[in-house]
Image 1 (tube, one colour):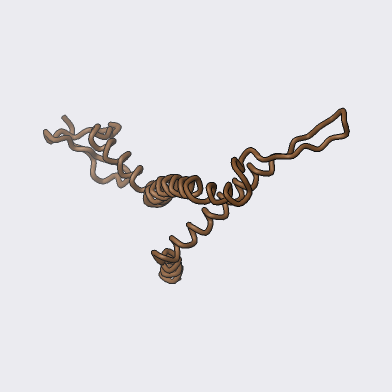
Image 2: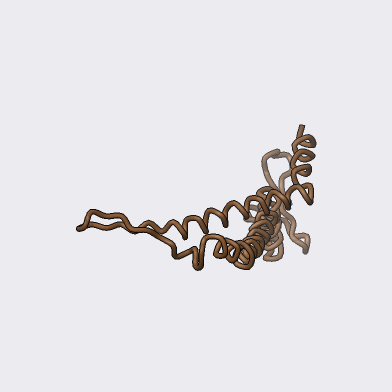
Amino acid sequence: MAEPKHDEPDEIVIVDKHGTHLHGVAVLLDSDDIVREQTAGFVHFLRDYAVVGLAVGFIIGQQAQTVVKQLIDSFVTPLLNFIIGQDIQHKSFAIGNGTHEATIAWGKFLYVLLDFAIAMVFIYAIVKLFRFDKLAHKKAEAKK
């Protein structure tokens, strides 16, 4: 077995664990190295794009939607039904000229509009109560 030439600067010499000099050999990563590299890449992706924070925000948003929907169903809808009359979601009126008729479901629109308005008020109150708006200012100042 010939010794490698060390006077050539661009020659790469690889020595295996038994001390054998290998020339012209492609280096393959061990399967553990591949898994570690892929896992590190995935963790890097999660950190860079704040995927975990987004997922947590999505889940909290879904639960907040459920709470607001129940708030409207339990309190707002019965109050509106008392003021306007029973079953506000099915209130509508029809317009037409005798041959063509269109039904305008104003009750359902009013219900959805109130649902939206109460959700916005609820979200605003939560943001102010837990001072989440202050966190955004601190992050912006830290980046500067």
